Length: 533
Image (tube, rainbow, N blue to C red; front, side, top):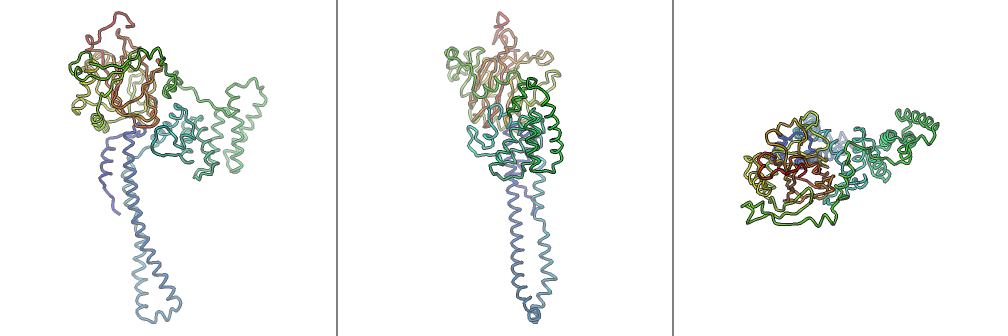
């Protein structure tokens, strides 16, 4: 079987030759993996056809020889008395059987293995699998989904069925365990036990699950349950060496614990004894507010505030280009003023920009607050690219449109940034304006005055832009754009504009944005008379 150089394979390899790993950070790039897998399936089916044809020949020969030898073995001398039979026996053993040996020894898998080897160098890595597992856990936490719901694939807005098997759930729990995340280890290992108890077949043994689970609950402070799970493990596998050592260790700790009075136990320990485990507190102080807004909860759009929000036609501060065809403008928030514009980009423009941006997508970075060096971060999961006007006329057209709408100059603005979010893609609360004195751009272009954010796709679930300090949530609508000022008229940062991109629960989120800088806007957005203007 020869290595097949299909157009699909060649096109896919052409795309991936420009792409780094970290597939999980961009759904756009993950779609390429679909075509890779389809090509592998086709290659595998071709291998199967060759093997089936080979086996068919061997089976036909075996049936033929079975019929012949049953007759010849019944009367060997009588059979060989016929000279033709004698000749054919010699010929079969000297020529035909060796030919069959050659057929059996033919390696029909060589072509498939060669094809597989070519594509394997572009496969997702262990980092991708870990990133994908963390993404599911992020969605689990943000949208308060239990493992059973995720395992059954019962997510809002989905149009395809998807379930997690016992082995899949075990993989989730093991990924969490390897990261020292015992909270999620427990949740997913308990789901594995639930599916095993329901009779689902799996390669994962219950003893493996209990091994991970017992140690995880011990790490969470639940000594009683760790002891009980370890005993269950030993009842299934009495020769389990590590479990035997753990059992003795847990029993000794439990004996020491009994000597303590109940009053010395903390509330967290008592909760652990009841099998209730709290999600660990992390580095983000507004985590609870941020995630509740992502779920559409806690939005502070009171009736009084809503009365101050209006819709209107926007003429771009008298821009001639918008006098005949103004844009529809809708207030999303009153203070700071956040507005949404409708029909900013056509479907054709969106598809063209995505087409240009996709080969350039790279893992989105953030500046290290201490060093100022660009680096990747777990709180920003997406890929982005920067488009120049020379890349395509559509980029220049979109830039001019944003200038007309805002009334600001694009001469000192940054390039058009296009971003595609990956599995559970997010960007946790941050400021768009710089608070770092070592930023070289501050001396020339000034700080980021304003943000113009284009939504280039609808998102079935999740993916909102939220402002935790305001209690505001803005949901993606394809073709629309939102705009706000990051700086007060005094040039001071407006700290109310701290915002975030919520994890994408279901869907593929594409956005593009333009950051307008201070320089060149002095007469377009004059300074205020006070520091808080």
